[in-house]
Image (tube, rainbow, N blue to C red; front, side, top):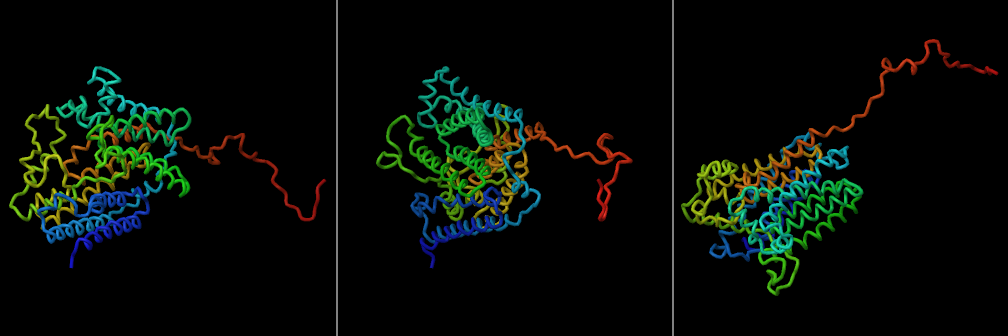
Length: 457
């Protein structure tokens, strides 16, 4: 008989079995299948921490909850299994041979640095220009609660340029992390200063995903340079410890500001916490609402709105928009229910067994084909941006276009760098017919004489 303990253990079994199966198939922690499987496991991680303690489950019977949870585990398992058969030896070989110590000359490194600094300067200009170019005011507002800064209000008011600088800042952090891991001397120090400033801005912005990407990128870059297992473990331990402290601080203080006041914990003190968005629980609520009502989303309007989202509203004022009227009782406008809940809202719980795996497979194919990037300078960084893009799309399919600017900019930058990158080719030794005449043996040169028992004086 099913019980809360049995279902909880089944979730742990799924996570451990899926990650083990994926790593055995992938043999590399950066392989798209392992990264994609990890993303699916993150989707259920909040339940592994909090169990059934969530407000979204209050009005649902335990039998219905168990049924929906088993449905989600079945769908996720089918996605992990089906995507394991996507293979391309050529693409996968790119990852196995990826290295950071490629012959990237000083000119190309300067271009990467200038691009990173330009993105960082754009975000700083946004902040200074909205507060009268006052350094004290920039610092004060940066420590204020998220959403209450002057530049935040301008961005929420429709300033596309301000929104774009925020979206592209993680690319600056990744590029500077790349230079930090591959550079030396004064160049490494300058890259460290720029990287630290970019991360500090991302922390004050309040969104944890870009911070995870920035630290994950620098961890991957340094791991690729390590030749020993001890060095790799030490890198993961150091970066993981710093990241745990920063993410905990962001969760507890971003809504009240970093300048002072009590944190989000009960006793007002700082503590290490793990907090994931509750999209898993909200997906379960979407399953329940789909079964208990005749309400559903229009698939045509849903995907039409996603496709037309990149068109600026200044060009098309009447562009379709997702509103609370469209979402209905499936979700609130500002929360996510993952692609699982969105498919249920459009197709119902029965057809979700067909469409959810197909959408999962489509997302994985995008990530798998982005392996082409890793053979280029800064390609590992662009590949990680694509992984972030897929993760955001798993959280909500509208991110397919709403979050497209950051990975698109990263891919474009990598392809530009590749066009400019011309590694030195080793000059092959000249063939005999092409050997200069002074290097050739004279036609009548004395040949070695082999003698038996004769000596020459």
